[in-house]
Length: 99
Image (cartoon, rainbow, N blue to C red; front, side):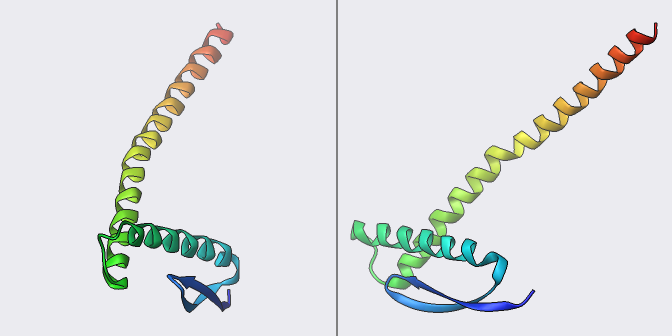
């Protein structure tokens, strides 16, 4: 799929980013999220400079991602166990019908 330049704005600076057409909306959403996160960090007044703000935003976003991955990791395992139990129940019910 062909990539196309997408214009995004972060902290008032414009960037052109190559992106496949089918992922452009996701890229723009990510850029809006990053821009908001960085602005929120700057509003605290504790971090000075765009580079430090970007690093703090990256750390915050990465921390949120890792928390989400940890919280959902157990869900896949639980779903697999439930599916296995459902298969066993189905097998028992089929066996009961045959007898």
